[in-house]
Length: 479
Image (tube, rainbow, N blue to C red; front, side, top):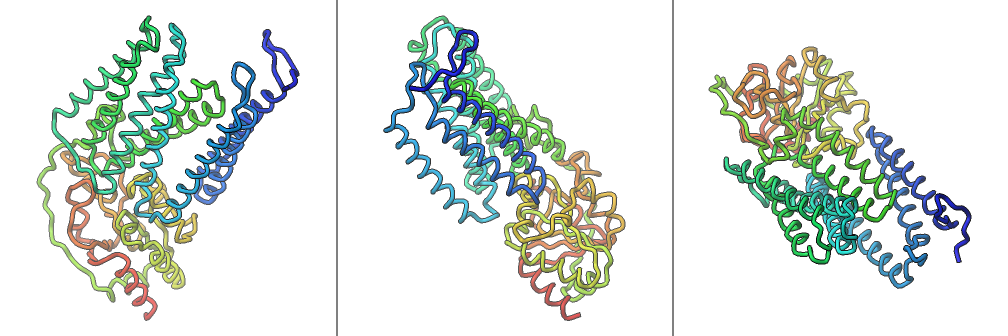
């Protein structure tokens, strides 16, 4: 029998309970330390390992030391079942992560985020019948966990479908009002459940109705959102999953779940706000599903498209002093990150200062370009954030735009009718020379014309980014 070692306010504390609470404290510290390391690409991998270690510690100590109100531990049969499920899930996650391509990383993040939301929603659904009648606090966190977890699940699955090209957009004007009505009705039903004098056993119909409405709202508020706004959506849904996990922690009075959920939720919300600023969108528009709606672009004098040959591009780059590479989703799609690094290495051998300009929302998720280039062993000090690189762009001899589109579009500055007007961009148009690598003249993910292509200083190098870069490296080596 577990030995009682103390008493507080009439409640006995055993050695096992004390060790369990202490392990949760250590786990929380590891979460915070891991999150701190995640703030820089060079230490991000270590941060993941430290945070994972904290979660592993919390899981192991819970299995070994957790006791119910009667002082009984988890039955051995249940322990084996839990361990088997964890093992299967870990094996599947490891296998998927090893095989996934960098171009599909945003989809994978959305899918994993959906599983977290589903887990939290299921916890709330299963624990609601066990709540005490009139226990408003307990029912409140259960209902909130169900709503947020369900929205995170269905919304993340739709986001996954959009990122993978399996789900299209529904941008009808009535969608905003429909989503607002759904949101009000969902929270209205939730409030009814929380303050109802009926026993939870008599309100099962209501909790399942709430589940259905929450799932529908998750689908409907993501459907109108355009693909260019997906980075913000991923951040928001990630915050939702964290908050739902915290609610599950409150249900079980589990400090590790509460602290972990709060950290994820807070980090996700901060990132969402930063992404909103970077995308020139308001957070309220995300919530009601009015995202991706913009004005009508004004007529713009386009000018003439001018191409550049590989030999001319090689000469221009070889005799430059400062070169900035601006990567986008096209770089990821072509799997050209390694050859891009070879290009900057070859140019560095010719005393050319080469850096990478990183836009906060380049690609399909926050940090996509950082992860992509880190995979190719590009030194972290060469990855320069937008705000730091922009003041020096007028001094850059050549800006090479590889697969980026909306994040370098001057329409953000000079077209008040454009959906991206006011969005911070990388000032590629201020460089002395601009080389744009694209397959063709197709529009970007936001579906609007890029005025940079018609700039007098811009030269287009058409073709697959990987092939073009490989030929360009060969040409530069021959000079």
